[in-house]
Length: 230
Image (cartoon, rainbow, N blue to C red):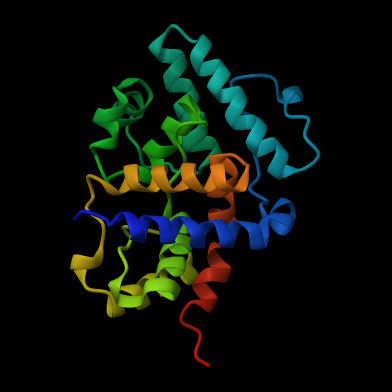
């Protein structure tokens, strides 16, 4: 599936609007807690004013630790922290975690939808200026934006597994309303996602991390309002 440039431009505009409308409330809304017991560096370095600032700082510090690591075991420890302790994903084998931490980036991305909530965290821990997390909540916000603007003619991001009932309800609505042919291919959607968040960040004079965090933080709001009956 080749996404038209006009569609891509329109989606960038809509995601930019989404961020601009919510950026003032993002600091309070983004409240993802950081597990400091298993940090690969001193927790004293996380000296921001709030969880939003500390989560941004955490990514930069992990990037620095990764760049300074010469041993695969150290890189694996960074991936384990961000996926297991920070992200709360406990289903990965040691082999998978080592692969996410040390394999070639394109080889990891070629996995597509499979394991993306984990491997996109590992890539973000390597370089948060280039890569961004893609998980179930990010998928909800993007797909909600797309549905409101394009309806059944939109191109949709994959639906990922989630324990959140609001997210699962939203996914159920999307599956009923959108045909399978409208979903972006598993092997290309992450690159499209990265292109979108980079373009939005540039337009909004911010970082791709803040765009991703906004999509994450307001996902339940999107899930509750996209199909709300008037």
